[in-house]
Amino acid sequence: MFVVEWAMSEIYNGTLDQYFFNSAGDMAADLPAAARFLGADDYAAIFDDAVAFFDPSRITDRSYRQARLRELEEAHRPDELGEVNDRIYELEDAGRIIYRQICEYIDDHSGVFFRDSPPV
Image 1: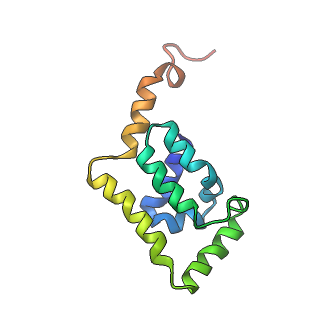
Image 2: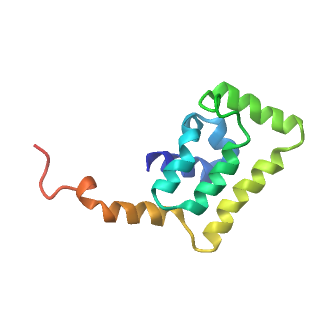
């Protein structure tokens, strides 16, 4: 859940480009699976496409991701990642907001997240 929350915070603040550029992208390899875990398969498919811009064996390396983003820019391909990003906003415009899945997961597993009494 944290992987999705952090990714979406970066994406909302500055698109997928910012997510991959910053340290949040260190967890990019886990992002599609984290979305699927929450039942957000539509987001997971988008995250799969975003992660595919990078070498899976190197995606945890921030320097590599930053260099790869520069390569995309130099190859005049930054819009391709932008188009993937736009699909996130299209889902939200259609009412599919990933934070709802996060809240539903917490509601369904409230005993894990909340306790009736303070911890001892």
